[in-house]
Length: 72
View (tube, rainbow, N blue to C red):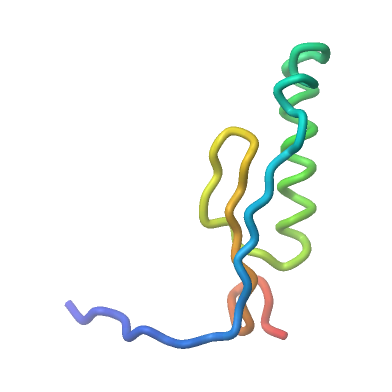
């Protein structure tokens, strides 16, 4: 099987975190916590990023020219 060839593309890496999520989650319902984090992650994705990692309240995403989500 042939391995894909590496390609060089312009891009940016973004690490984001929902600040204060632990304190917020102690005073609101669990369903609201999920809605809040999902809305945040969806907003970042709609900006043209591809999520490459999620961990609790943090997300690592990449913005690349010519990617499936951002062909500009």
